[in-house]
Length: 89
Image 1: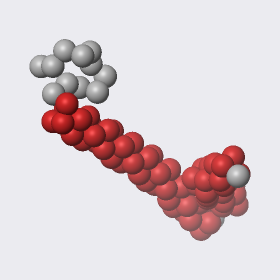
Image 2: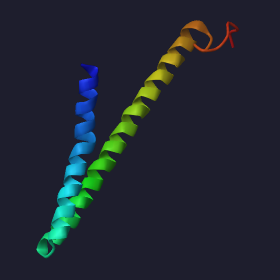
Image 3: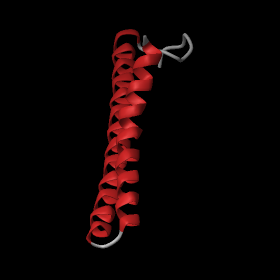
């Protein structure tokens, strides 16, 4: 079940911008007024990819912050860092 969820997430994360970029390339190939629309759609696809990347960085940062907070709580209770030796500081 988890593998299916990952495939679905990847399809949304990368599939939507890919589909937008393909549509933009098709519009560029058509030429005329559609070429401007194609450039616009390709730009939107890049923006969607960048938003996905920024969101992932934000989630990773929150995870690291939570780990640091748990380590500090452990230090307050035990007088040593969780991955340190038995010697208190």
